[in-house]
Length: 306
Image 1: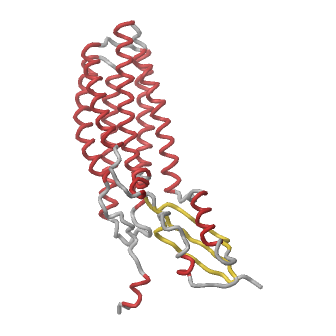
Image 2: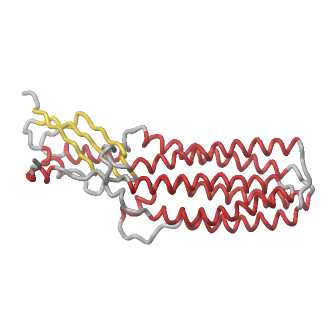
Image 3: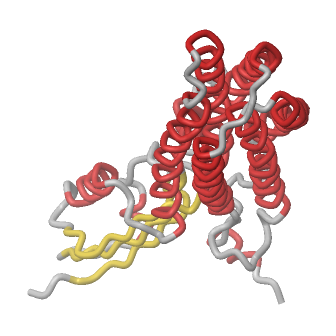
């Protein structure tokens, strides 16, 4: 029989993950834009013989796939937010989507290097005027996508800004379209250099340079998302803030502290307190910072030995 007296001690573990994030709608919109431009660049890159343009088109194709993964992560996290099989909700699906996107970024960068090196060894004729026109069009489309994903809603609450910053799934999508915009710029530079100065080798060289830049972004995103997926301890600043909030009261001393992210800008924390005057756990919880995103708090209290 259900004991209603226990309800006040229980709580949901969805932590708001059932809400639709702004990044989901934006990413879906960018998919439609990117997929259209992707088809145009691949066809014209092959027809006009530009490796930089073809690489940009293939880059957009791969990023369209990656963006689909990002949208899937948003939908999955929402639909399974209340699934009891997930101990702390589906917040880490966001980080997993970002991690997957980062892996794909790195793979696509290696593909760009391979294709560019091959074109350095075996150069082909390029229809410069047509290729430049399509590359400029691609840059415009990519620029619009960057603005859509990079735009921050006009929220007045600090948490909303932090939530945007810690949405690794959105950050992954943003880096994908930013990489597309960068490769479009490099393609235009390469095509202009080849057309007016005869520097045909600039076309594949820019492909290699763009790949190095994309790898740099990918490694950074891999680092931040893997820390979350592996339950790395939270920031020293937040840990210090938590310790001071409790240790500044009476003779309390925190002897063990585990702080880890369980979703975008939300944390779980386990605290062991040693004190001469033990109080119930709820007594210590009221001293914790209210703006730190601590949504799942466990406190154990130990009597200090005399």
